[in-house]
Image (cartoon, rainbow, N blue to C red; front, side):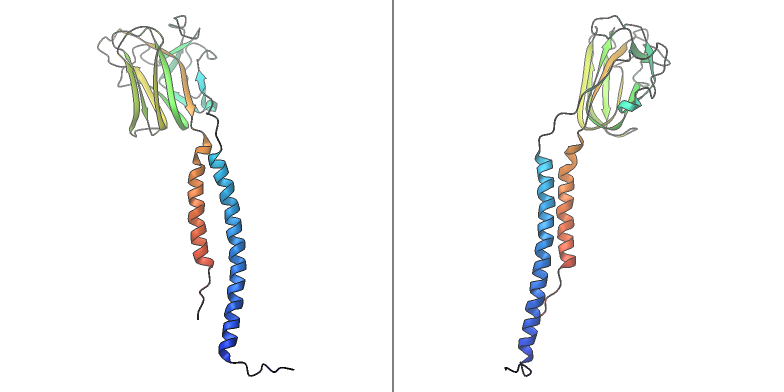
Length: 231
């Protein structure tokens, strides 16, 4: 029978170190396998084609004339300020009868300094609205990246007159739009709006951000869990 009682200390240290390395290798391999599985899952989700978000259209015809629009469409993700339902111009070409909207105080005389405002519960990528009985003062639609204040994302305007003049703005983070007459050179020049529409931002667009965060966390976790190996 062999006697290992006099085995050199250096050999024992090497054997111990090899055992620790083997243990860490197995643990690390399992950890990397889990991370890879989650990463592959998120990559597939982020690369999967996403259908375009459904366009939301509001024609105001489900409300009664004289009603302040306010939170009537909050369930659709938008609230309004300074907007009142009217039957004025509801029968014009392009309008969805019987209703349109104008300013809740000034009627059709929607001064640029006191516009109709629409605030979104979550960011949208495009907004459009149609103007009716537009006169010399024209109409304008401004989009902002905040529910109040913020920076101008995009704008659209029409200086011409007529009916069903559609203004459209687009951007990656629209949270508020304001629409009114482009100018107020002719105070008696009134206008109404109809067919307010917007496109919500699809939620899956955020998956690449989660993916980047996952890689960062995995790197941090590996540094924390890897034991130091001493010779």
